[in-house]
Image (cartoon, rainbow, N blue to C red):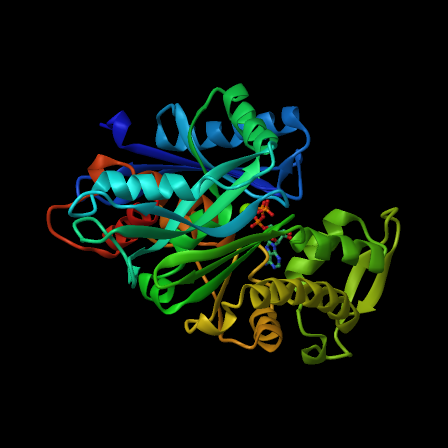
Length: 404
Ligand SMILES: Nc1ncnc2c1ncn2[C@@H]1O[C@H](COP(=O)(O)OP(=O)(O)OP(=O)(O)O)[C@@H](O)[C@H]1O
Ligand SMILES: [Mg+2]
């Protein structure tokens, strides 16, 4: 029998799809998939809700499918947020220590102090991610509690979001009959499902290429150093194909997935593809290389923007573990080679992991965020800790607990 408080649900409200993943903490303290549903998303633009009714309908639809598969009703979900309004700021907090040693209260107080920075009234803080502490002259401390010193400093990465964007996501979930346990930055959720602890420690860059947005997160020394959201994704490639080849959006999408290539020079000029016309009454033949040229120019723009963003942080050289691509648009043929040539680092495509059960359902980079949302929820559950360990899953959870 399913115990309700062992149920953790992720709801990823994306620009092209909305998906609901129901997981249960099993007797081995692992997270097991028991239900999954996906529906088409039409109510979002560039990661933001623009049509509430359509979004609520799509949420209800995928939640019902997932509930039917799991054979249970769900109440609360962990959901994500993205969009151009998201800002990541690295800042610090400093306090004086009065006692003999640093207490957990001092640790909380210095993090509170770091929150005290000028932000517009329309923005709210969604994450405070401590990176490291410094006690007097000693830097690079992971946990300062118990140490002696007179000055405690914390370096943090703060993620802010538009208050309206958070409220719209919460309202959509509520109108679909769901409570929101927490809202997580989408690339933080994806990161936990995709990156290994070693990659995060060595330094790694995660790029989640979705439909309407591309979400970036940079990790080093186990902590998040930088986050950014680019308002560009796979749907822009589809639009370019529709305009360039004069074909309907749905055909452009199908052609992109079947024949798209990110490096035109690697596609033979002789290979021909059939392209239906906009009216649907004729079909023309086009060289696949022309298609690849359209795809390449948009993907090149995307990776160049990402490169500028990453270069400007000064953290690019620290990413010894390279770049990991995920998100629905990452399986595009030739994408890793193109990314390697523009970002000058080794690139791999990451699939979500860390869950058990019906894993085949989510073995696609498009589901990195929803799997990560469940793992995030699991890090808050008292049922996920085994007395003996640490397993791969526990290491993920420990890391998550540590950063939040
Ligand atoms: N095999 C494929 N090759 C290339 N692109 C693909 C492939 N499969 C899906 N895509 C593209 O992936 C994109 C959708 O990705 P994803 O499902 O991660 O987006 P989303 O989560 O709905 O959107 P966002 O995160 O931007 O709000 C679409 O643009 C789609 O065309
Ligand atoms: Mg997404």
